[in-house]
Length: 136
Image (tube, rainbow, N blue to C red; front, side):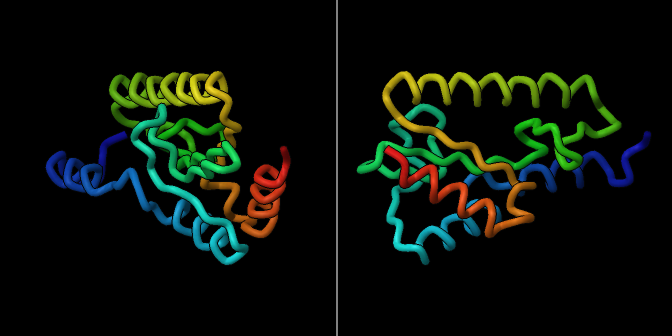
């Protein structure tokens, strides 16, 4: 399948994709803040620079985009073009994510990954996060 935009335009589009303060992450942060939770953001001293950190609870949230982190939902599918580029890139992201979660758990942190697609049912997802945060 041929890409509908030029290589230069595609490059600009991909460069504009942020890694922090994404829409899904902001939605989770706002909902948790409304419920009285306070947190740190993007702690670079922890493996993977977790999106949301609750230091007093020793809990961490990663809010992953389905495409970039290779989720098995319909939004996590690989593109039809340039598979030789995308397949190894997404697979490397998945391996890095798994390594970061393992390192954090080995250090005594509780880790929860929230997928972008799960936020389509935001109340249920926020309730699941709150349960995670309130368990010992």
